[in-house]
Length: 266
Image 1 (spheres, one colour):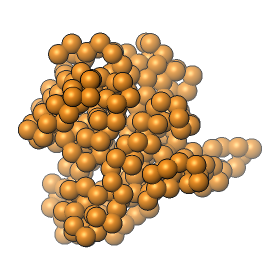
Image 2 (tube, one colour; image 1 turned 120 degrees about the horizontal axis):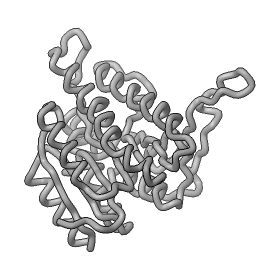
Image 3 (cartoon, rainbow, N blue to C red; image 1 turned 90 degrees about the horizontal axis):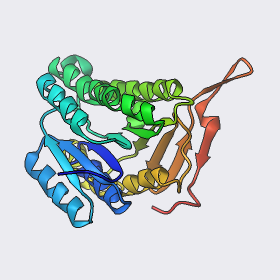
Image 4 (cartoon, rainbow, N blue to C red; image 1 turned 120 degrees about the vertical axis):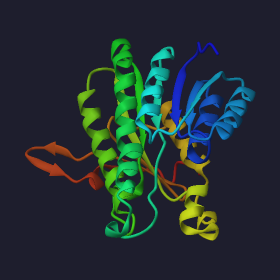
């Protein structure tokens, strides 16, 4: 399918937050390029995107496989100019202490949550730099800001993704290209339900809430500084800037928070 409009790439788009992002972006006037493991679910999301009047290209495969990741990079290179990249695909380890986990969980956690975003960013940055325009959004987690027992690998990989976001944002200063992250709180998704049970999942916000605020930021309706983290939790929205070096002192991130609670609806 020929894609000619504003193009956004969303990984992990077959369900949950990825699906809601694809739909919200389509409503905002973007064409979509989406990828995920589940070919059938991905096709359903693609059909939903098209029903909203957008064009959609898709590519399915397990990003935990290096050969499939290489194929995804070839796919990215075949796309026209990419305006937005959202690294949403994520892997959550089975709950348990680190020493009791299968070592394969180490590989999967860091492959999907860190190495894949690195590969996708490397793929899109040259063209974004060339046109001095583009936005990269990494979907992090509150577990990338605070440690949670029995989720050590997930926490470590998401802490790393936040560090990547801040460093890349600094490298892009003055280029016209921006990089920031979103750390949603708990969401009512299948992943949450599988980990913590249906009752727990149903108490969380829907993934459409975070998707709305991310797209609001892309549209300029919510100000997100380069390198910042958009935190969306139970209807509250915070924009947390990275720690800054000022007058020889580290300014804690919490002192750089903009809280939109009273001004942004869920």
